[in-house]
Length: 284
Ligand code: PMP
Image (cartoon, rainbow, N blue to C red; front, side, top):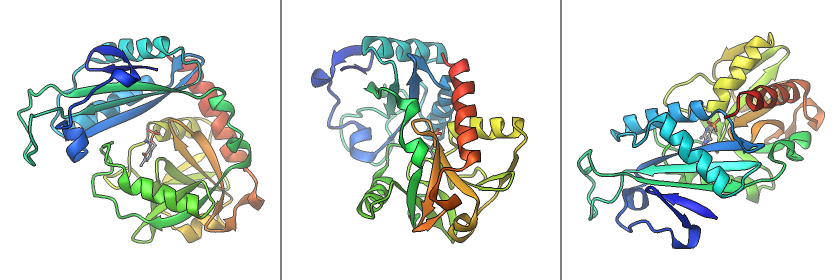
């Protein structure tokens, strides 16, 4: 693979970042994952907007305009011949030359890294036909989950707990209410209503979430942004998750309780089709 490091295009084995980089020492950095379908970027503008917000919340300067980012994204897709897959972008505060809790001056050049993953047939994932099983675990992450930082240790631990339990993912629960999945937003369906937690610093503001809620409203579903419990989810007609890499993924079991007879439901299926159709059409 060819990766991008601070303006250079290099084979992955030759890519270098300083051991003093604050991304490495302090998880002081942010990232974005953008899917590629048929060689085109899915919701590129949405990811650019959130990148800019994450950086500004951490008082970092966005090193590129959206037009420059687009050129870099397109170049890495082309260099690696990606048809279906994803582009990973990470911007860390950079290398201040030593370890210190205080931020270095704002004009320190950030460290910018991009790489790709090839995932042939990404949109036809067999899992979308059978759905995911999830368990619930306590949400003990920090209080600024709206910033997409590279500090992903607890979500990794929760994913491992899910794997050990023989399921696909974990839904995180705080004060009795579901916040989100380890790396996705969580939804339940009751009749014609799609219910998901409202935006706040408790959850990541999913780019896929924004698109799916827009398409759901256009398709005459009722959208309700409010808290729900695991017990309510287990009684719901359907559940699903959204993320840039899984798109819309049905959830068929929560803590051992089957939803919609353990089968993928019609609303999740419809939303997945709608999302993929609309986003492919608008892809860059
Ligand atoms: N929540 C969390 C905690 C995530 O890590 C992600 C994916 N990065 C999401 C939600 C989904 O966000 P998006 O739709 O922008 O991928």
